[in-house]
Amino acid sequence: MAPEARPETRRLAGVACAAFALACSLAPVDALARHSRAHKQPPPPAERHLPYPELELPFQVNGGQYAPVAWSEIAGWSEDDHLAAYKAFRVSCKPIAAQKTPPADPKALGTSLRDPCQVAKGLELSDDPKAKAFFEEHFLPLRISRLGEGEGFVTGYYEPIVDGSRTENEVYKVPVYRRPSNLFVRGTTQASAGLPNKGQVFRKIGRRKLVPYYDRGEIEDGAIAGRGLEICYLKEQADLLFSQIQGSARVSLDDGSTVRINYDAHNGYPYTAVGRILIERNIIPRDQMSMQKIREWMENNPNEADELRRQNKSYVFFREVQLSDKDEAVGAQGVPLTPGRSIAVDKSLHVYGTPFFIEGELPIETAQSKTPFRRLMIAQDTGSAIIGPARADLYFGAGLDAGKIAGRLRHGARFVMLVPRSLDPAARGRKLPVPDDRPSEKIAKLFPQTAAVAKPPEVTDATNAKPAAAPAPAPGPAQTAAIQAPVAQRVPLPEPRPQVEAVSTKPVQRHPRRYRHRR
Image 1 (cartoon, rainbow, N blue to C red):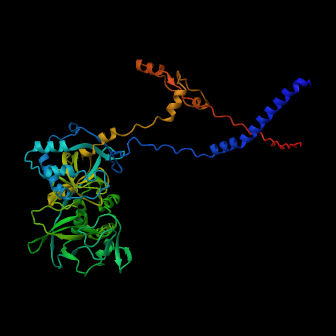
Image 2 (tube, rainbow, N blue to C red; image 1 turned 90 degrees about the vertical axis):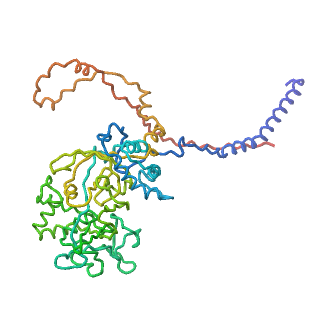
């Protein structure tokens, strides 16, 4: 190298060494920065707020379906006696409006009846048009039925009037028992005015031992006799049975006075309809079944009647109520019933005081008649056999005539439930968010549909085996258009991703290079 080029070479070599030294000094700092960025936690995602955090969903009746209906679409609504229904409704409103802090009710209507009841409390009406306007102003009609069915089912009940005596003798020897002290129902006490007619019932032995209570046969054989539980005595076991089925009775005593008895408790066994047993045994045809037919058969077959009664293990205990001969029976709500306006409903689904408009053709006048029944009824009672959203027991009053009508009712009917306007399901439904698009619709946009004419079916051995059909008539204009209409093909799905088998390769061993620094 020329002597004049040596200083320049030494200068460039010095610059390169300085740059290398600077890079080596900055390398640990850059690696530390990359390490800190790799281990830095990402910021927490922003909290997502729902569009309706306190959304009021439309109410739901378990096992039922309902649909809004206009007042003009209810057959017989304008012709009904709304004033009579309003008076019965006000009777139910007394205990509802008296509750200052009502407990939360899990049923569909909950405590919503308080609003119309507060209005009815101070509203004395004397004519039918104003009563009709009251219901139309404060309620909304919903046609209701069991899920998948078009109509409901109604039966009838009444208050029997039977003969009895305060003391046992040769004529009156069937005891009417009050609730025993060893009858135990979970969640209740002996101080309760009336025990529920559903649920588990036990016989308490000592302080802790619980066993099933006596059934009907054991009680009729004297399991609880002689304990001072007798209210009075009746003539026949059939009188007691029908009084238990109806839930109340008027006992005309031999001394001229009257004892009124009401349901107080039961022994925990499910109710078995003796009429159904007679139908299954082909003793009484289904179309002729009534309480009168059952009573006649029991009177003519006393030995078989004892065995039939014991098939129904359920047994009802009564309590004596202080009512006069002119007062009506008291329902499960605790208010007097109104003949022709009170009904018993499923307590687990409905709220006492709810108006129901029931329409149907019922055998009111005679057993074969189809009398139009279109009447606004008030739910004021319940029963163990009343199960379902569109199931009602119509109360017809007391006495033999009411018993004849009630005994032949087992018919279908249409139900319209009146709901307070505060629970308008249509208004609540408008607030519900629209659901997201279905994934299939998104896929359909990626694969547009193509129209094609339907191909004739392929001829196979199976089709050749069938006999030749008669020639079809010439198609009309409508049929021709239907044949020539293009049929959309099924939207093809994306091709599945091919499965590629991984090629196993041996990992390449890398040997770190070792540098020797020359001194």
